Amino acid sequence: MAAKSDGAAVSVEDDNTPRSLSEPGNPVARSRCTAAGGKPYTLLDCCWVLCALLVFFSDGATDLWLAADYYLRGDYWWFGLTLVFVVVPSAVVQVLSFRWFVYDYSDLSGGEGSGAAGADATAGDSTLSTKDSDQHGGNAVGSPRRCCTICMWVFQTVLHVLQLGQVWRYVHALYLGAQSRWHRNGPRRHFHWRLMFESADITMLRLLEAFLKSAPQLVLQLSIMIHGNGVLPLQGLSASASLVSLAWMIASYQKVLRDSRDDKLPMSYKAVIAQMLWHFFTIGARTVAFALFASVFQLYFGIFIVSHWCVMTFWIIQGETDFCMSKWEEIIYNMVVGIIYIFCWFNVKEGPSRFRMALYYSVTLAENVALTAAWYTYRGPQTSDSSALVVVCLVACSFALGTFFMLVYYCWLHPDGPVLGSQWGGCVDEGVVGTGGMVGVIDACLTPSQGSQTDMVITSPPRTLPRTKDKDLGDPVPGERDRDKDSCLPVFQVRPSPSSSPALLHRTSSTSRAQEGPVIRIDLPRKRYPAWDAHFIDRRLRKTILLLETTSAISPRIQYRSSLMGSKEVLEYETTV
Image 1 (cartoon, helix red, strand yellow):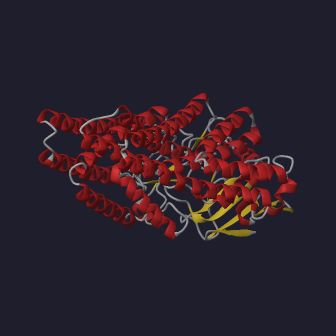
Image 2 (cartoon, rainbow, N blue to C red):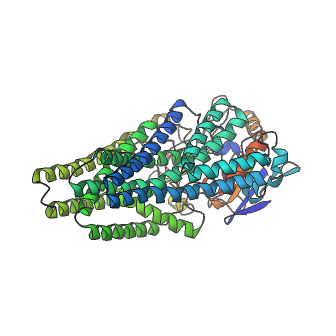
Image 3 (cartoon, rainbow, N blue to C red):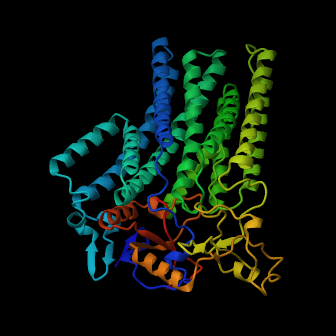
């Protein structure tokens, strides 16, 4: 049966239909096949979450401490502004977090709509409805008792009233990570799914909070320092914590997003640190330039910010992003990203981004120079020429350092390899990941006539397969050496290992089919990176995945509608989480 999920028909069924090896739906011919349990949870992952908690507490605590210091000094105007930029963004994020909890836990405790709004799972001749999930999955999860349900509601309400919803999510992520490491097979997959979902929620909430709270707080405190021609220790501490929080959350968001996408290689922690330093210095230069200009031209600074936000939002909307499940959600998302674009670059569109990034940073550099030059020209008499020159050099050096670390990231630490050289675009990943006798994956290069029939351009190889060097490529098929020679270079070839045989391939195909579990078919095209997959942002799809993890011995697979196939065919892939 099928169910609607924000306009997407979702069906869940057992995959027992025989398929030939060349058929796109064949499990042996799936390009994005990884271990069902996902990447193992490591001690480094745990330390990263603990550091994220430290950044969260340091940012909030220093802001509140500084607000209290302003109050004790009698600076009630600065006290009010500092407190507003702490309380209001935090309350917005807590409301959103509690809304997600209400949706998730009410389905779990009430049993109504568990899974994807009543999607059915078909296994052989028996039918398992998600509304009866408590009876089937009682041994694995169990139905919460009424007293436990009440306690959980009270506990979550108190946490969110105390503005600690993100703290609970971080602690819960640590618990899920430990469980996914300690358990094996089915339970491990289940905890890993939940860990990835929780990590996605945390990064979305913290990114929103960072640009609603930390970014304006940073500009405010820098403006107060420049206006007062002095720096209090608490002001410097608060500004530093806000800047670290901004850089941390942008890098953390990109890492979790890549970890959730099985069509993208994961980001190493070296790359994350390089991204942090890149954004730390570029945002630092940007906010100092803002603070300098705002200390002299308050009204014109407000006009500049609003104008920049409008232009950036229009630019983003013109790019036709595809992040959300509805049109109005997409518009709101674009408006939020427009706020992010006031401070830093944030990729929102699939494909080569070098031109768009170069354009953005050219505009940013010109704005920084203009804002700093205006302050230098019209600054007050209390600022000496030598001090002004030091500040100008600080802005220039910070932006140069940020650009340097950006080049380091893209030249040496990018997950797809050096992207300033050859690109991976232009080939469609049709995918054959072998088991037993098959080796490699096929990235079939499109001829000009084929290129017009598809819009699924994969810009990186599957994360489970190393890139094939020229010396590793096998000999081309006879008669095809010169065909389409000028249109596309070969990337991968499918070749049997020496021990492979038709009988072995048949046994491999049969074994793979026997191990197939339920399939979640989503009547939507898969969202392009850097968007989240629909099953990460649609919470009803999440419920279906978690339900099937508890009722099936095999991890469920997910299918999205593909424009490559006919109306009755879809391109299948196996998720990595």
